[in-house]
Length: 325
Image (cartoon, rainbow, N blue to C red):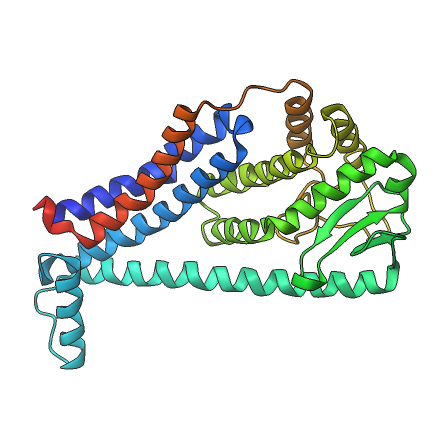
């Protein structure tokens, strides 16, 4: 299992730095946001599996020729209270590191979920006091605030879209339809689950620059996916104007009513003071006003194939390291 451990470690390094940096700088994701989203998820999953797997395989190397045999041997030693004479200090350290990292990632995922749920409950309570139902628009609330605001609050059957009076005064009927379709697309496509996972990754590994790159890229991609859904009902210029209006709010919110983060208040990611990522907004508007051709089937196949390979490679190295001798 010696070579499997080193290959997993090498893959973890590639997925922790050069691969995410290259993808974050690439231009093609704006032409295929759904495929880019799949690739980001594959990088995150394969990277975590490779990091944990490399340490696990390295630590178990003296106990067997493959992972299943080594884990069985380790379990038998634990049950019989047999001394682990075959394991040196380095192997014990590697096994401990694998266990701690795995537990840390899972704990952070659960902690992030609990934090998000708490923030949503508090925000929903605030909405119950400060908002009123929108006329003729189900599952839509209106808050009395001059800031142009539009966001969605996930909650299963209780999910709502929230608009401000200030936004309603600025939008035309078509622009309002575009905003509503955009926000509801976030709910229908379960974007809050993606943001939860990548927010947890960033919280678990804040020292890893690529976790920040991934979160920023995913935030922008889900906005583009929602934009594409809105384009089924309105034209590009109409949607671009609506995006610009929503992004034009003042920098300060002295009443504390407006949501603190950029994406439709899924309560996941910190944003700039006005809740809008200026760079992301510019990219989205530019994408709408100067549309690029979609990726060719061959290019899509390459990106999807790379995503599949990233998920398969660490799994094969973990489950069949004896193939490598």
